[in-house]
Each structure stands twice: as C-alpha cells, then as structure tokens.
Image (cartoon, rainbow over all chains, first blue to last red; front, top):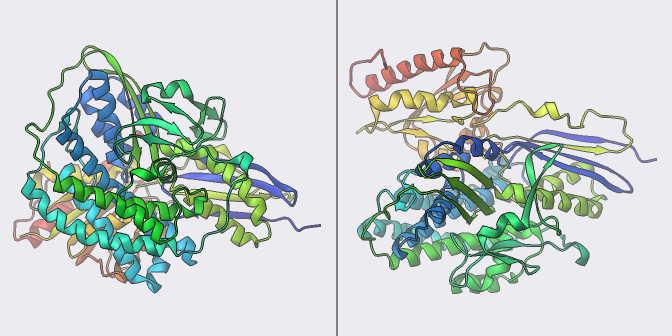
Length: 454
Length: 161
C-alpha cells in the first residue's frame, strides 16, 4: 500500500494575489482540483454605482497595481461606447503606446521575477539573483523602459492618472517622446536577447489530448496585433462583437471561490492571455518578432502552457517594436481629449490586458451616474482552465517525488501569471493524497479570510 | 535638491493595510513636489527603482500578533534585520526583506531607509483604518515631516494639521 502524504505550502510566492489550491489525488488519478481565489473586482463593481462616468478609469485602475492601464483602457472604451464617442487616430495611437508600456512592465516582471526561477531551479528571484545578477539586472532595465512609457503618458509610473474618457488630460509633444525613443531602442536589444534566452529554457512536456484541446480566446483586429480593439474570436470559430460578450460568456459562482468562474456557453472552459493572442494573431506581429520566433524555432502556434514565458518575451519585443513605430509616426493631437457630455446608455469594451481579455460593461443615466458595472478580469476567465490543466497534468507527473510534484503544480499555475487579487499576496497550496486521514491540508472556507497585503 | 522620497506599501482599500497611503496623503501638502510621495503599487521591481540612490522613508502596515494594533515598529532598513513577520507586504509573495536582499544583489539600494511599520488589525476590503491605526499614522506623518525638514535644512515641523 502506498504511503499517503499531504503536502502543504502556506505561502506560495511568485503569483499575484491571494488564493489557495487544493488537490485530492491517489494512485488512480486526480479526483478534485479547486483553485480558490479572492477577487476584489466584484467589490469595485459595487463601488462604481452612483459614481460619475468620468471617475471610472481612475477608480478601476486601483484594482491592480501591476496593470492599471488595462483597467483604464477597458473603462474608457466602454464609457466612450456608451456615449457614442470615437477618438482621432492620434489619440488612439497614444493609448496603444501607453498599453505597450504596461505590457513591457507586467510581462517583464513575470518573466524575470516570477517565472524564470522555476526553469532555472531556484526557489525565487533572490536566490536566482545570487547566481544570475546580470540576468535580473537586464530584467530591471527592460522593465524600466516600460515604466518610462507609462510615466510619461500616464503622469506617473504607479497608479497613472492621465487617462480620461475622451482621450487624455495632457498629451506629450514630439520632442518629449524623443528621449524615450533612445531608451526603448536600447531596451529592445535586451528584449531580443530575452527571447533567445527564454526559448532555450527546459520546458516540461505537456500537451493536451485532442479531445481536451484548449479553446483560445482573444481580440482580433485585421489591422493590428490586438490591444484596444477588435472582435472576440476563438480557435473554435467564435467571432463576435464585444457587445455580445454577455450572450456567449457566463459567470457562475463556485462554492469554494469568491471569484466567479467564466465559461463559454455550451462549451466550457477557455483560455485567454498571451498564448491566445499569439495563436490567433501571429501574422499581425511585427516582421522582427516573427523572424526572431522563426530563428529560435518557436512555432506560430503554441499549445504548451509552460512555454508561455517565450510568448511573453515575444510580446515584450513586439511592444518595444510597436512603441518605436508609434513614436516615429507620432503627431501631437490637436486636442488632448474629445469633449464629453453624459447621456443615458450602456457601453461595452474589451481590451487585451497583459494577462488577457479584460471586459467592462457600464450603464449610466442621463446625469452620467453609473447605474451598473460589470468587470470580468482575465484570471477569472482562466480559473477553470488552470484547474483543468492540473487535473490533466498531474497524472503525467505522478512519478515525481512529492516535492517536485508540488513544484510542478506551482509552476503550472504561474504559467498563467494569475493576478489573483491584484494586491494581496499569498496562495496556499494543499496537495491531499486520498486516504491519508490527514485533513490538516484541506481548505476551510473560513481559513482564508485573513486578508493581508500591500 | 532633495534626494528624499516617502514610499508607501499597502492597499488603500484594504482596511489598515491602507495606512501607508494614508500617511502619504497627510504628507503631500507639506513636502511635495520637493520630496516625492510615492504610493507603491506593490511591484517589487518598481520598488527597487523607486528607492535606488535615494534617502527613503517607507511606511507600511504590519501584521504582528504580539503587538498592539497601532503600535509602531521603526527600523533602519539598511542595518537592522527586517523581521519577515513584520514585512509580508509588497507584491507577488515578495517580502520587503526579499526586496532588500535583491536590491543588494543588483546594486539597487537606497542611501538611507527608515522603515515605519504600523501594526494593523483589520485588513478587510473597504473597511477603512481602525481608530488606533489612524492615530498612529498621524504621529508617523509628523515624525517623517520632522526628519525630512531636519535633513533638508528646514525647521522641524511638529504638526501636519
């Protein structure tokens, strides 16, 4: 008889947010996987009611200290949809530029600080930095260039405040962008090196069987790699305008999680994020990025989530390439923002946050007060797919010692760069081998009400 | 030119965890723009850039069951050992101690680091600051103001009101 064991990790580092994972398994297979997370956005939806429509971007930006631009972008686009506003191309370009900055910041943080230690065999970034200080320093320098974009266009690099419904509060001159250009050129070279380095990492072999293939979902726009616009498409033929999102996607409450699970109606789990964008929009990446992907032998379609670090590195390179293109073509808009006036209506928007599709819907009244808000974050959409990955993955790794098995679970979660509650920081992992009689590792719903964060 | 900055960790919508941003709000009218007040979003890599080569006062909530709510834990971040139990803040599972360790490894350290930890008791979303924490926060704001004024040649200020 196999000796039963329970593995418990109280504080799983290198995921963004707070949550817990419970896995019940025995030698016959995996019987239960529960990813339990705590998501503030539901509360933010409540905060929003009764607030002025102009406040939406700054309030929702506070949902996440890592990807505030994504929340601002989805909020302003939804409000502009409600108001029937369209922006001049120059203002749209600036919004794309600031989004490039956030992709660089967020992806680089994940690549170097959160995910790389898994592949190099370290417990965390500090341990890795002892042996690879230059690697971490490169990450800091790349990220600094992303910070510079957000800082210049957002007014400050943390919790930026310059984005508004209708455009920006202030737009930069062409001269103000030039020093940024030099910094981006230098960092782009480091981003190219990052792609080569990421592609050389050892990846666990994991691909789903034909019957269990992912349904990747992302925005798609004929003219560009998706950030702020496009229709919602999937690898199984979904193609809908964003305003039909609620007809095709459902959120449901799961007993063990305070976050809602998203599914595609009649189809189930789906997968948003860099891999979805890449797989559905490879031909819209810049020639430089496509060429480098080819040079390092990385195919235009990626189905192994452990290779998401390569996709992120390619998207970082793309963000630099795109930012440089936008700066080179920049013409200062005649106005910083299109005038807005409240009117009753409902607006819809989805943009591509670093972690994937971020959907906002708002209803406002004649006075511009928000009467209803709905926000669906990428991690909420990926929850079920993460659970499915663990369910399908674990049998392939059962031969590993429990410590390694546990590490594999953690790495599998980090493949998705989950932004669990955006500002609080621990995920408790319990692997419970059935029959152990040890329930110490089981999740008690009340156990995680200690909220601690920064 | 001032090389000082005040940095807060903590989430302003999570009860006592918002004490850092609260202290910043108290200080801003008196010290900005000469001394930037930076509300960290919890990104460790940003933190290293924010404090690099600066004199920094860092304010955070701490969760220490052996201390009373509202107690102040002061320490010199460059010389004292930062207790992990007092510094589970910052983002992504990184602690302040790890940020310091990483900063030393990649030469991204502040010139001076005065850490003010304020013991909180309630960290629920939108709970607001507890009375004891808010009272302590006002004291900490005064201390920081006096410290910065002293080092920048101004007369120590004893009131932030």
